[in-house]
Image (cartoon, rainbow, N blue to C red; front, side, top):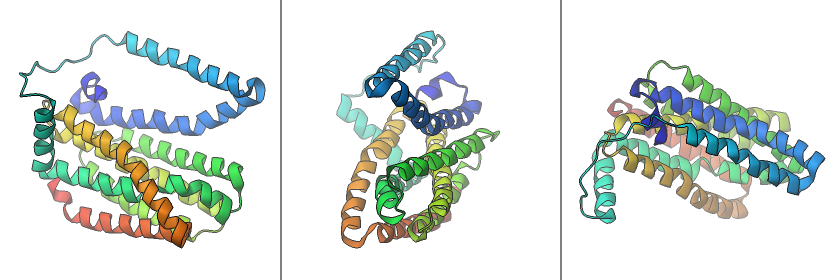
Length: 273
């Protein structure tokens, strides 16, 4: 939401993609730096360095001077009334509703692959904790490439197509992860998964900010955060329970099927976005 207040509307999609680039690049660089910090300073020293790094965040926030303030609004009857108004707006507009519903399915049936990844590394690939770290790094690398790809776009037009193709690509990646028994092949599919995941998540973020009016943008983005952060653990819980019964590869194959169905259904309604 803050990005929308700091960046002009015509550059908002680039700013969102660059923000995603920084977040996902940290997933590649961060573990490596943490490993060096632990080797030289121990676990306590690593946590101390991590805490000190937040000084840069505080200084950046303090340096912000020109934050565009939305026009003042009249109170409309308390927080529950505001929440209801936001829900009515979001689900009453078909393009916004489609993006949010797609994000719900994606968070529940796509993102839990990262929760199952340690089991893949240990039981399927036999690579243990080291292999899990490498697989995670390749996923972060793919996500960084995907974010840079989105950042180079000159306009937000076509972001719906990015969400569809990213969902279809995620289906291919999940199917490949379920099928692969080779560590290096799995690294390739994790790169694809990271690339597709950021295209969907950053694309949905951009679409929602562009489709919402100024008055409701904050509430719509709150729904985005609630779905992305709140439903992913639920999906991981379900995926873990299913994996305990039928195994991780078959569970991941089922997730791939859900992503393929989502891409097909979403693609048919693409014109609405």
